[in-house]
Length: 172
Length: 330
Ligand SMILES: Cc1cc2nc3c(=O)[nH]c(=O)nc-3n(C[C@H](O)[C@H](O)[C@H](O)COP(=O)(O)OP(=O)(O)OC[C@H]3O[C@@H](n4cnc5c(N)ncnc54)[C@H](O)[C@@H]3O)c2cc1C
Ligand code: SF4
Ligand code: FES
Ligand code: FES
Image 1 (cartoon, chains in turn orange, brown):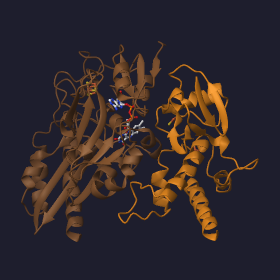
Image 2 (image 1 turned 180 degrees about the vertical axis):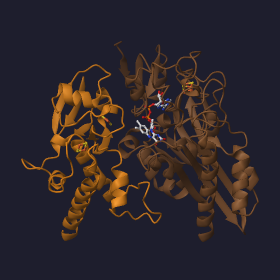
Image 3 (image 1 turned 60 degrees about the vertical axis):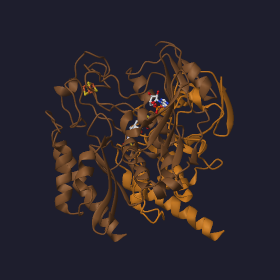
Image 4 (image 1 turned 135 degrees about the horizontal axis):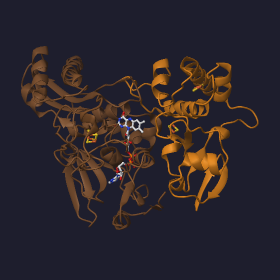
């Protein structure tokens, strides 16, 4: 039996030990927001937050998540409304078919948190200061492939949400 | 589908006990093992999860080195303040690899032991001496690109895909293990992986069921650190060729060079010939070129990956030039 929290709710489920977190979410728990693109860590469509950090749920064993906390796209809404990143994706037209979008949004939310925490990326300059430039967003979001090629609008949505969050903080 | 057991021990002793079961494998982040299990390239009967073993995280060693527990994730390792400051080439190598999602899961031990990305190895319908000894090597007759140019054999031309391990080889890291019978030993990062020879099915010198517990880095070398990775797209791709460099120049002469190459061999390739050629020399284009030629003198490639011989030389020269420029500016 695996006990964990998913989108704030306690869940207990027994599955075959080979079951991935992605399959448990989609097939057993009917949380079909997370998508299966490649099932091999190559596309990012299955991205969810595990204890707050983004992972490819297709390469995580569900049984290994015992005691952990999972957030999927279904858990990113703001009460009954869309969350800030979700709204930005809508207003920037940051998708076409929408298949990659749940993974993109989970990844984007994590990206802003990682930047705020000061995590480095391959394009972070030597001085250690991290700025939410297009280059930084592109590099940090490279684990999410969009076959429709909505990349420019995705970067816009992430940057706007990042900027807005920073302004709110400065105002406080 | 055959049944499988999933075991989550909470001590190294319990893990070594569990791994003695028939056909059991350790699982770290699972980003390589689960991938290969889905392809039926790996078919373990039991998985022994290493996440709850207390392998110690980070600590400073006597002599100002750094100890890294095998369970530390690639993200945590890349962002560790001592790694950013004292072992920068390791941080850069890690950040050049995979994606944040994968690095958040990938562990230090698992990264070392990830298997080749040779497409024929990953396709059970093709002959592959590494997957099925004696079946042949599809890469010798089919398209090759990510394949090896140094230390190859007539039986296998696979490369080891890790970026992290290349930086570890340049830094002379040491790997601390426990064998299934409990005995401890230490293996140099440069000696962990082996050349394929006529037993390409054996990737490393580790025994079955040997647990990587920690990695230690010796005292910092100073100098300029740089990881240069050449690949088919600028992010989220394995290296065609990569170079990990630590360079120190004093009074116009090269005092220290550490150079290791990725993407060129069955193991992270410590470029000892190039290092020897550069020792005490002036950091000139001519010397960089001579060092690259010396290192690649024995390179061989029959297939469509032959371009990598020239690419490796150019990568070495460009990386040395950039490191020297930065070192001179410092
Ligand atoms: C799409 C994709 C792109 C990638 N791109 C890159 C890249 O550009 N550069 C790069 O370097 N890597 C890349 N990777 C590979 C990634 O870095 C590895 O999959 C990862 O480092 C493996 O670590 P893990 O902890 O997930 O290993 P696992 O999958 O858990 O295990 C790998 C192997 O190590 C063994 N093992 C694990 N831990 C231990 C231990 N403590 N002791 C003994 N044995 C152990 C397992 O039994 C298994 O055989 C990529 C992977 C994917 C899927
Ligand atoms: S190069 Fe090695 S891994 Fe690839 S097909 Fe040949 S034997 Fe297998
Ligand atoms: S479905 Fe998980 S990365 Fe593609
Ligand atoms: S919107 Fe179609 S794949 Fe991204």
